[in-house]
Length: 431
Image (tube, rainbow, N blue to C red; front, side, top):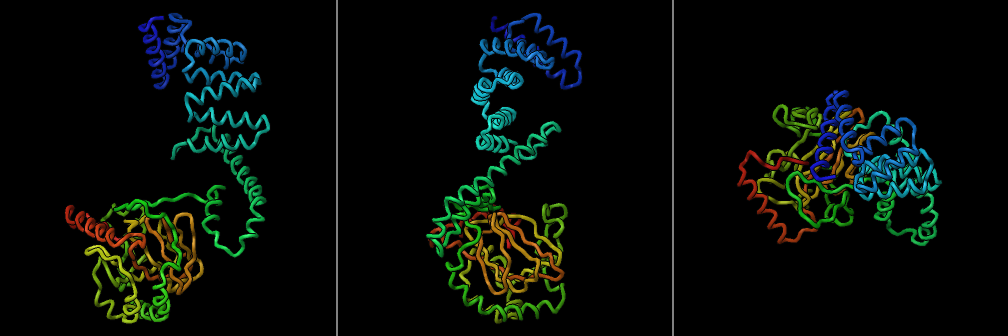
């Protein structure tokens, strides 16, 4: 067959697919029959003939025709797809596995082939290998993919098989780790436990997703070790004084708070339910690098406690420090902060039961008077399921991994970007 003839047959098949897609089944069938008459030995024609044989239940005939076509064009994935179907029906497991491997060599992310290979491993009793292929198949499914009805049960089975294998693997590895756990009892193994949970697919991997500036080679840590911030001791010691001043502020009523989220109509996105609402209200002590002298004067003991605060100082942007009040039955949706060059500190003040906080894969409860430090460029969310408000003091600090020189450079870079774009493009708050 000449190149021109091959091109003409392929054009016919393309036209047939377009006709079929537009509902013109008769026109598509006429094109296919014409191609079959003109070039009965073309691989596309042979594949079409084999597909009809498969539908008619003639598996042996389909296998023979497909092997003939593969001899002509072994790089055509469609031929291998139909051959694996014929071999499955004929229960020729060894040949089916070879055909699946050839197909996956041509198309490594072919969902059907991955699912079929996993199923073949199950038939052979190799459940661990099956789980591996099912896991790969689930990974190649694009986000937002809506499976057709005939595929839903298969994908649900794949998910169940992977979950069952993960549970079996967990039992197995815990048996291996038991003696070592006893040997290292009392030592900190929280990082290893995170590693194990991730391996067992019990913990998702999160990475920094800053909305403004990403600084490379900073450790992606959700919650930092409290012992790395000894200066927090004096702030925690003032918790009762800080809480008392906050309650005095709140006694003026909700109008004393500023809605934390305030965007133009239609621009609030995921925060639309909280936009311009005091359900998430704040009382600013510092805002975008400027102290609120009036508010600080009203909270003198809080201001004194914050003298120990190593501020992230970027004129026009930070530091910021607020009392953050989350109303009853209110949730702050998952979001990320502006830059991993700074960290946030939470000092819990009023925490009714039913409140929680998640950063990345780690979830914590606030404990009044016990501060924690976290990277808010990791996805995080907060909720208050109680019947009364929750109150936390929040302020920002430099990421301690930055050198003095790096802080200087980040400070000037942030200011320069703001000057370039003007006041309308400020990074925005993210506490």
